[in-house]
Length: 434
Ligand code: AMO
Image (cartoon, helix red, strand yellow):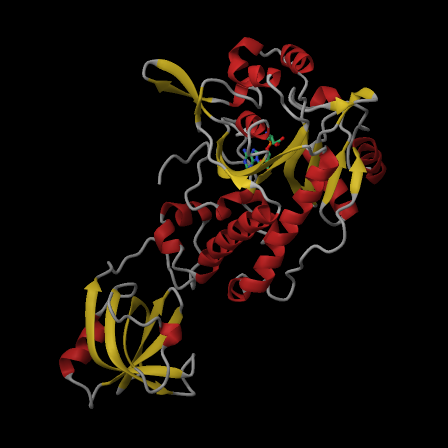
């Protein structure tokens, strides 16, 4: 809209055209106030019934809540107004009327359940708190990109329609591809690895991953956003260094640039950028510490996956972001390399927030023969991955990388109860629309 001023930019003395949603009408008798909301904030519009044109006053007072209005007028200083200024209108136009019965209350006075919010996301995101999550998400992704660029990584985009899966056969979504069976990709794993043998050497991708897991939990999605990194000539410790730096960069950017959003979420006092190095625990130390908490009925033994309650107990014990390294080879995927001096130990690592796992990564198997053997051990047919394995015959450098769940990063950063709050339109067992 030509000449439109954001409400936050309206200064006393200005003549402005503002446009936004009617947040609230306060009719005090001789005087009434319309509170108009746009993406920058809210502003008070004053209606003086005896002094102003009747038609103008009527248009303002008749407008239903959440209708879109265009208001022209003069901005005056008014200490009693919520923002210290108000608009004295010369014209009010209803651009788009809203029905009087709304499925949820965008002013936030009446709480709505999460399913109602997700079914009516447009209205939900008129609430400052919900909107703040996505402003912060955008800032996190911006900061992450910038951090990767500072590490000289190149952003890539890889196919989401693929012929084979990588993260275990049961979690694939099949689709029909011109009469052939294809799948939605679970991870850019193999593609990002192929790039470290290309001239690009160091890459990152931020894109969707699809997991047909049956889990219906507050921290699983069937379509998530993965922040992936892979670098040639890196071992797992160097990959962990970059992982830690990228996560810290995201927190720093939010602390620096999202003051208003943190305030809307009630986090401005408590938001803390992780300081110091993330502790690096071996898997063995991790199971010992979990066992020592007494949180589990049965003691964990070498080779066990960490159950969710175990992760929680350990997270509380550690109390900050941390890595778990040196996992048993048998519980890490085929593409993760074992330690050279002990093939029962993998170079795989996880990076954890006290509440949950955020990252998996490791150094990769770059030796052709060992790679093929790994496929077979995992019950996968190496022939089906020929496009991938054959590149390991043409000079594939040692390399390492990781994948970080963007929604889990935001969920834990903002202390959200449910991962769905960090996705505009979540995909889960019940939800395929909107
Ligand atoms: P992994 O399967 O552990 O590893 O996934 C990496 C990270 O992605 C996020 N994530 C999910 N978030 C929400 N819902 C899901 N269903 C979901 N699945 C995964 C988590 C998880 O830690 N290829 C490897 C990464 C690598 O080694 O580079 C991989 O995909 O935060």
